[in-house]
Image 1 (cartoon, rainbow, N blue to C red):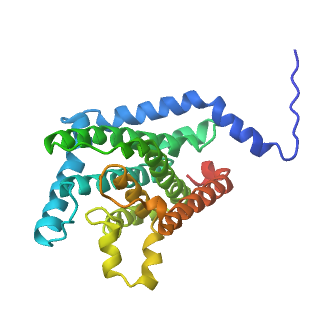
Image 2 (image 1 turned 180 degrees about the vertical axis):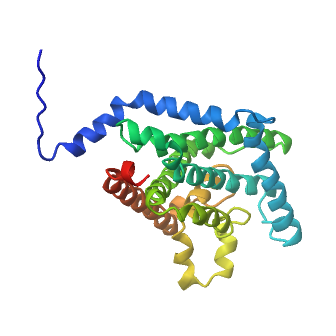
Length: 279
């Protein structure tokens, strides 16, 4: 039996997205491998996914709530408000760090086997999402400790998860492509993560930020995609939090998320054919 290879113009892009589905098992394998490697030979194991946000919450609650006296007038305990902002940010930070180094960490696989390279950073974000779900269980425990009953709007949580994933995947995809060509980005990314937490509404709320930033400059704050995501996540948990969906600043953050996602996929696909040579 003989086979014919027919090359048709304009079919490469269509076949690429089909290949993503054909190689779905590889996606599962890489995701499961990253999960096992993350906790292999660690004494505390999955407890790291609980201790990191828990200790950060304690520090932020003390610094912003007790020292800086920035506690809100909400009926909800301040620790829950902080943790509700910390969870999506922790996922964003982990996903950005893991995905940006994912191609470099799979050099042998990239140089020897063909598959859609998009699978590698996507599997890294999924690994960070598992950490996020583990930390979310801790949030439920905090509800019990403070005897707090979340509102019905917590049912919007799946929407928040989708937005957090999109906000993390876009920049992570772009940075991982740049990191292959310009290795300096591995030093820039930790700075972005460290600096970003202080310009995002994690320890404070966007309402408090609006009081100190002049109104004509406030749009720059909303260019941070995590500002809108954190506000929506917090709104679904905190009973008396304002609904960001009713205010236009949220849609500025949403537009930035979509823009980053589209431009990142385009840039990644543009550079992908040279990854094996550059890496």
